[in-house]
Length: 91
Image (cartoon, rainbow, N blue to C red; front, side, top):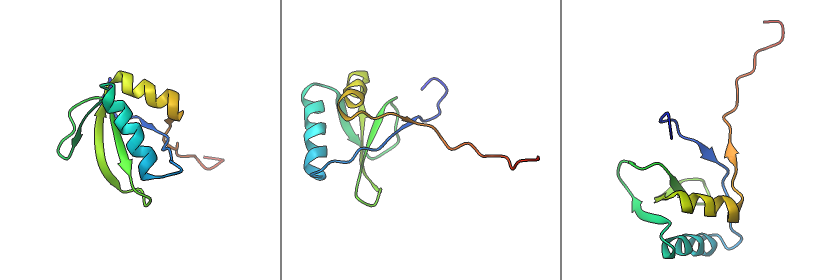
């Protein structure tokens, strides 16, 4: 993050929910792409939130650039742009 603003990417869903997510995180861990889970203040540059079915954060992992590229390639996550406020016509 060059300017300290968070960049969000699309969420992905796993057919087998927890098992698919766990497999992805374990693969990333085995190849040195993920750090320890964070419960406190975040200090790195790239993070992945693991969410439950209601969208609540269960845990947050720091990932490195290699991990980020792995997620983009395998899960096809893309950047989400914030909704831009629209101006009513005539103003």
